[in-house]
Length: 68
Image: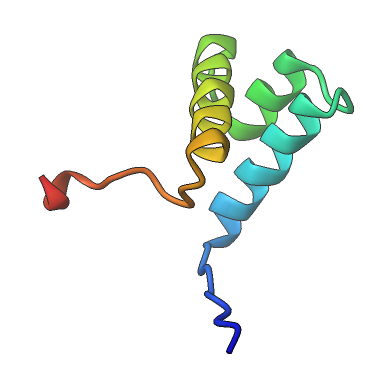
């Protein structure tokens, strides 16, 4: 039997994800994403790096501080 997992996201998280994906796909520029999310371009670069690392490891969320 195939088990389907559900991912719950807030609208803010969903917007952030779409912006990061648009940046990776080349549809958006880094400064546009930074302005839209209210972040610096450095913070956007860090988000992209973390997003790519999570994709490579197959995780859907970063470990929380409570888990430590």
